[in-house]
Length: 102
Image (cartoon, rainbow, N blue to C red; front, side):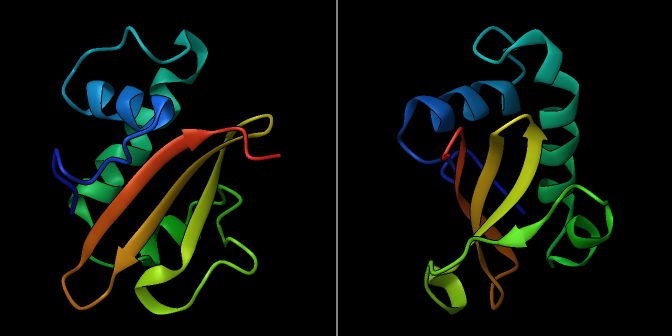
């Protein structure tokens, strides 16, 4: 589950939030469909199970905390990633960000 407070206060997080609200203008056109699909999945899910099986190069971000502090990553395009954290107890995805962390 995600909501308007789920997004990180970064340029990429703000772009994702606008996309979640229906504004496509801040995301590269060739990545709109992929990011929209991921946001729909995160909004509908309360576990990491589906995102893990999509073949989206999902992985926990190495060395980035444990439990709710752990950062997760899925590949979007090239080096661009959708990064997020997950609160298992609440089934809530938060700190969503879209960036090239490499």
